[in-house]
Image (cartoon, rainbow, N blue to C red):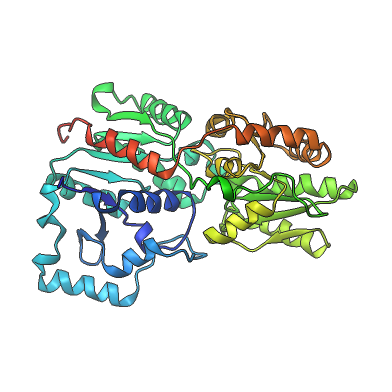
Length: 400
């Protein structure tokens, strides 16, 4: 039996948040199965180790948390300190590391994890790969949490230590290479960078609902965390203009809110609800409730200004639900296959015009739905297969 691929889940195994990176990490863990050994850097034990049962439970659960950060229960902290102080070699990760077939880091790792990378690299012989999601913190620092902005330049330099970087889209790949160009990093000092598109949970054909909602009041669904770059303020202004003009529809929002960059959108949302506007918002949702929301909607809107991939766009299309989104960057890549009303501008008037068209022109909506049904979609299994094959065929670079 081949040696397992070591899969770093230092953050995802300690949170029940369900934002994009966590969904990628959990999906890879699920698809790899026994072909991967999930690991974490334990800041209390101060070493790399396999996951404990409670961490595996965090990965497997369908429940969710409204907190994005990693959480370590007190017993886990005490256990880590005890292992470090009294020494438990059988639990130490290094015993099995040399027999691994490679290392894969699907998360945006923390400074503590980055500081521990040399020790892990030194104990393994297989190729070392990382997933690169996006460079939003560089392009839109004003719409990004301040801690992420401060951290990001160091993270992009730390990626240079890997043998290969798998970007989620061609746009993300180009942005990373352009940043290294700007830093003056020579090609010989860079890892291989390729674009491997993500997968989605592709619904079975029998479960795909009809596109045209039978409810009297059409429902426009928007799935995505409430934060600055997701552009919910423009979406809410667009909807308010349509409601004021007499157009009848409901807006349904699903997503975890960010306390810093999502505050203004939440305040606007609550004000519109208080004014009697038909808006539903319940925060994040589990898989079953998310599937039900897609089934109940007439179409979706994803007003985000920038993404590394844009999972909700493809998830909507895979359920035959057209999507209003950007025509630029990674979102433009997702929209290319059809089924989207893709916009060059994402200001309130442009979004309003797009929503109005799909709410009042059933032929336009039906045509987009037909285009969505004609597409094929990559599954998480496809992504895990392609990523693993690429990772395991990388050439190990000399350690700087």
